[in-house]
Length: 95
Image (cartoon, rainbow, N blue to C red; front, side, top):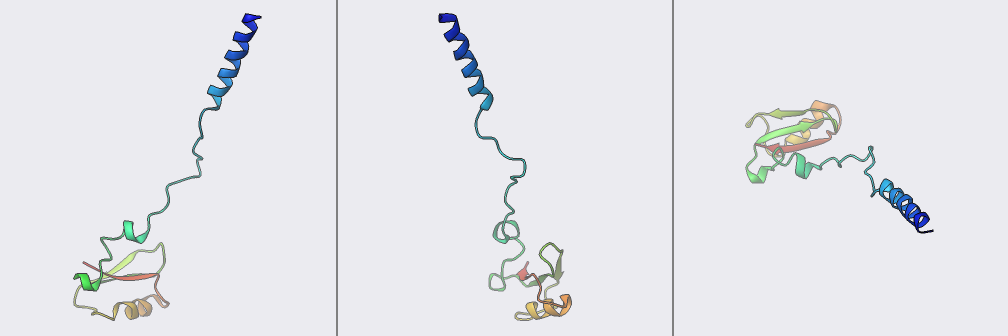
């Protein structure tokens, strides 16, 4: 009877060890960082001294940068709308 208890205990322990902890799903990737963390160096703001207009027509599209002096404060959004043909996904002032 004692051997039967040992075998049952080993089998039960093996099942518990095989189950393990909670596994991460393959489809669960890290969340996409927000603009505040991923592109903070790009969009600093006119008040912070940034003088280069940056325009992004679509959410995943490239940034178009205009050199300082080409566009002035208040013109970045309007130029982005004119360039993209619609309201741009993002406009900001960068260094």
